[in-house]
Image (cartoon, one colour):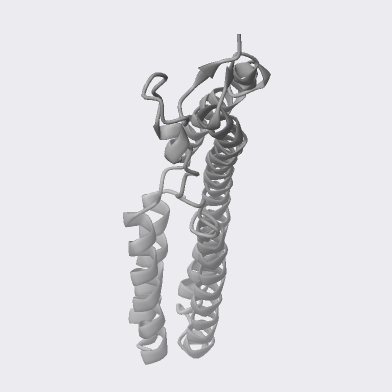
Length: 218
């Protein structure tokens, strides 16, 4: 939908209101003008949303790879070390790996939501463009009908119906867009990260003799 299309619709609507001198028609013209002004002023950017989604997908992949490093090779620490600190290390690793997986999943979910929003925004503008074109055609027909004085009341009624229906369609389309955008705010990921360093693990010494350090098995 182009700004020129919006301007044409508003011009036709105002022309019809002037010809019919109808209070309800003027009110609807004002409402349509206000609604379209907000939409055109902040149209959104589907391409930017898609690029942002790609970056979040990259974050998900990077975090997932970091979590994969906490695999079998990392768990082999107990082959060489023993003691409370070694036990604490091994007990903490699975929760850390799970946290990496959760973080990767959250980043992937954000990427999906952003792509959904980009598609929804493109769909919104395409559908709104169709609605604006249909409104322009109906308003043009109503304006033409005003050439016959006796047809002015019918033209006013037709214009009023067209504008009211457009506002309803625009509201529905905008509601659907807001519903999609709301998914970005639902069920946010848990910001907490599981602790790894308990008292035993915090003591990384080997020679202080308190029994909580790391000891080689052989």
